[in-house]
Length: 336
Image: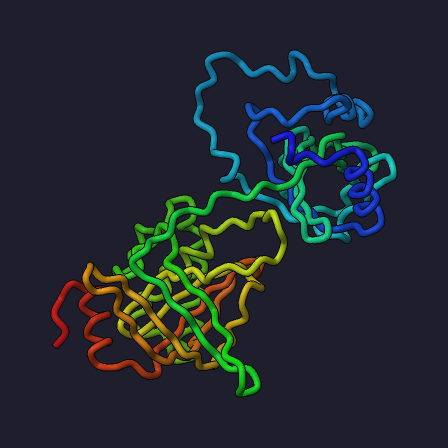
């Protein structure tokens, strides 16, 4: 992991970048039993310059405390906009009018992430209260965000969307089955994580009204994977900013295709028609079955922070034998 740490010169360049640019950061609280990386004048020593207590008895947790705690990845990240912070020459980030929920994490350890020339970086420190407000000390150790191992995707299905640019060049958008979703099964409410169901219900009520107003609600079953995706997804900094990723295919039926993505990854415009190719690997000696269709973006849906989006696409042309194949794959019943 040492290779992920910035050198002293690199840290100075990054610090000057933060001072000059006032870039936005994301702050994620860390469980108290997870120690931050330490090196020399780390956050512990520098906390004292902000009026913090020295580590000692106050840092110790009572023995026998076996209360389960959420994993760090599940703790809610807080986005701090550029206009809500100021970086001082001393390596201190002052927070001005930060989101209210930051108050809940005063004197708690936190992971601070940001982008430097599209490179994802982070450090660990504490949120402190000082006379000027809330502050974060930038420690001596700043590290590169490491590439996270991607969750394995189901391999029984893949897809591509195509559209033309200036009637000449076909642009290809890769799509892959989302991990954790039963792509061809009828979505049900219990698929949604219990902790996300309240927010999912709020989204569902809003989106049903929207779909009915547009006359595209249908049975509404296609909205369950939409609200699940938007309620469960947590934005995370990447090792490299802005890298294009395949669209997450959340649900496929004989009528519609539902995809999700991080906002800004691919612009699927409402009302636009796309060519669609779906591939299904088959047992040997056969290779795969391909389905060709066209589809139109029926509706786009976004989470509250517009960090993630879902698109519902309805087929505008699909061969009858392909309708039968998708229907029987999804329902397990004969198509009549």
